[in-house]
Length: 172
Length: 147
Image (tube, rainbow over all chains, first blue to last red; front, side, top):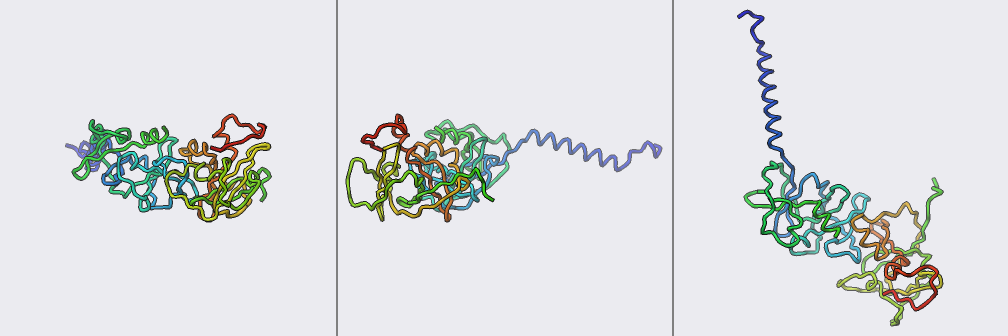
C-alpha cells in the first residue's frame, strides 16, 4: 500500500469519534429525560416536573387574606412581587399545620403562577421519560385530579403532580 | 420628577385581627369610638369580610360611617385606626391573578407594601355593590343593610 492510500491515523480517530457522537445522539433521542423535583408534603413524598418550578423560596411570612378558601392561605412578597400561595395539603389529604416552617415552590405554567407550600425538597433528578407510569387506578379524592403519573424513587412509588391540573383545580 | 398622570389616593389605614387594610378616606364620613351599641345598620368588619372561625379580638373598636352613594351610608366596626396617608397609584400592586376573582367580590382590589407589611385595599362601595347588585349611585336613601 502506497503512503497516499494509507488512511491517516487522525482520520481513523475522527471517524470513530464522529461515529460515537452519532450513536450518542441516537441514544439521547431514545432516552428522553425529564427533570423532576421530589419534595415532602405531610407524611408523603410527591414530585413536580422541574420545568414547572421556577425557584424554591425559604420559609417566608404569608399574609392572610380574608374570604379565601383554606387551600389559599394568602400572599407572599417575593422581592417586591406579590404572589399567591396554595396549600397542597388540602388537596392531598395530608394533615394541616400552621405552615410556619414550610418552603414555597414557585410554580409557573402558561398563565398560571403561584407559590406552593411544601415541607422540604428531597431531591432534583433527571429520569427517563419512559419510567413515568400512568397514575394508579386506586388513587381517590382530590389527589387523583392532580396526579399525572407515578415514578420510582428510592424504592418507593411517588406521585408526579401536574401544575396544570393544580391550576385547573384551584380555578374551579 | 412629577408624573402629571399620577392619581393620588388618601387612604385611611386600620387593622382588624392582625390584617392591615386601607380604604379611600373620601368614602369615610365619620369616625367614633364604639360604645357597645347594637343596631341593625352596624356591622362588625370581620363578619362582613368573612374572617371565618378564627378568634376575633378587637383592641380599640371604632365605628366608621361609610358613604356608599348619594345620601347613602353604612356603619362598620373596625379596629386599630392607624393613619391617614396619601399614596400614589404607582405604589399600588395588583392581586395575583389567581386570587383576584375571589377577593374582588369582597371589595378587595389592590395591595400596598408599607413598612414590610401588606395593606389590603378595600373599596366599601364595591363591597356593597357586590352584595347588592342592583344598587346604583343615584338610588334614593333607604335602610341599607350590608349583610
